[in-house]
Amino acid sequence: MLLHHGKMKKFTALTALVAYLAITLPALAAPISEKTFSIRPKLVVVIAIDQMRADYLTRFRSRFLAPELGEGKPGGFRFLMSRGAYFPFGEYDVLHNMTGPGHAMILSGSYPYQMGIALNDWYESDKGQVYCVRDDSSPLVVGQSSWRGLSPKNFLGTTVGDELKNAGYSSKVVTVALKDRAAILLGGHRADLALWFDPKNMQWTTSRHYIPEGGMPSWVEALSQSEKSKKGQKYEWNVSGPGTGLSSSKTSGLKISTEYGSYESFAYPMGVDIVLNAAKAAVTQLKLGRGQSPDLLAMSFSSHDYLAHAHGANAREMEEMTIAEDKQLSGFLQFLKKELGSLDDVLLALTADHGGPYDPEWLKTQKIPAGNIDQQLAVKQGNDRLNTVFGKPASGKPYVAFAADFNFFLDPEVLAEKKLDPAAVETALKKELLGIHGILTGFTKTEYRLRQLPPVLFERQTLKGYMPGRSGDVVLIPKPHFQTAGSTVSHQTGYAYDRTVPIILMGKRIKPGVYSERAEVIDIAPTLSFLLGITRPAMSEGRVLSEILTDPK
Image (cartoon, rainbow, N blue to C red; front, side, top):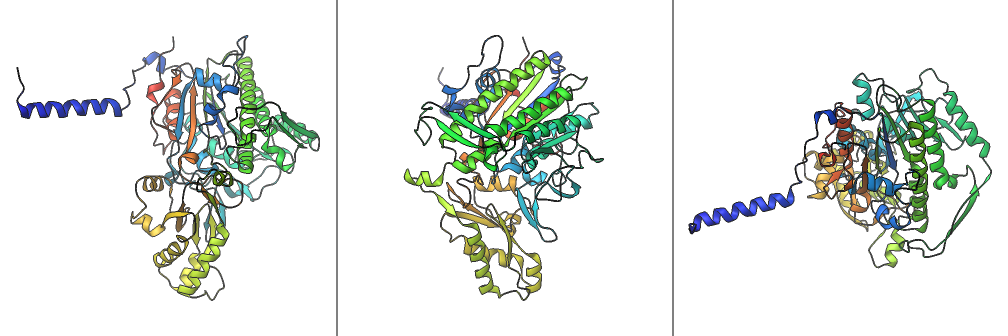
């Protein structure tokens, strides 16, 4: 029987729609049993590798340890990639990708526009420069810092660890990193202990937010004494062989010699060892994973970031650092297995706080447009222009009080003194700065409020990442591969190289495999919360990665 022409058109359209939805929508995940849902991990381990590009796990795979090393010993990255749910293209969908916002997003599942950590540093008229974890009321217990005190005070909302505590569980939450902001923002407000390293004094420290009465735990003091005893000793990092051939340098091997505790030494595998030694001590001394309630241990490998800033993502040093971390990760997994008897009750998540770019000087030799932008020169240029247009302030103070990562902050006291409309000053500053070589576009705080933003990708990323009062009055968006001058590379943008990171989750309720579905880093927190049976963090917008859940055999 022939279909009427009109019915045929409707049938064809319906068929096309069904086919389109089948291709574009993720497959509905099969439900898991209630019995499986009730199984809880005893220990959640979260590992963030600072400035870990997504493609490091694919480019250097041939040099990683095997998934299994014999006698039941786990390997490193390939063990997680084969035993876990691996998303090669995890994503941060925000305009500025850097350490503070990245670590804050991992276990809160929320974007900066909500939780307040939009940048590493911003400007407030009554305080001046504000560091993202600055809190003058929470001084350090021991050691030194550039700030009077540190805590998660500026972070709004909660983390997975906070919600474990809020739910009434006797869970222990511990975080460890060389960087203070990494440890603090992974832990949230209720962490039992957030440890970071004071390189000047070669010791672990924390603030009165975590230990109000003061005094470091004895086991932490022992760690610090061990590190202090090595200060000044010769540290060598030597590797041999041609490598993968995928790094910019094709030289055979790598030879580095420095002093243990020197500034540069923390950029080498030594820095990762320091963090892992502290993580192992926390597991042993606090008996993590052996209580009635799930415990959480989160750590960040800051050394990876230090080295990347110095050499760029495509340097041979970064390849060798990743290979070293593979072995170090294997050693830590072997430790966990021995300490806990098995990894069956461990739920592990691995990701990065952001990606990273190639060296712009190298890119230029490869005929790719790239370059550095002198941000301080841009501040001077902007102030000169505003002085011309609106006149010099009688106070002698500059119009632009502070700039960081292409965010330019006007001094509200100067605008009040001159009785100027902020929108007019913002517009004049933006117009001047858009003429700088390497700048693509930008917007002002007023344009943000009116939703007059650069289109599509930039608009979406801005709405998720901009926070009035903590983001700039004028924000510039550079062209791809252009960055502020200073380090060899700086990660500051929402381009693919800065926002794309690996995501791996491994546990007995997680189905192993490589997943092409879109996954954001903010999906980690709600997924962990689901598996823990707790409410997701207060401002979480991520989704449960339901496609990776399965009933264990």
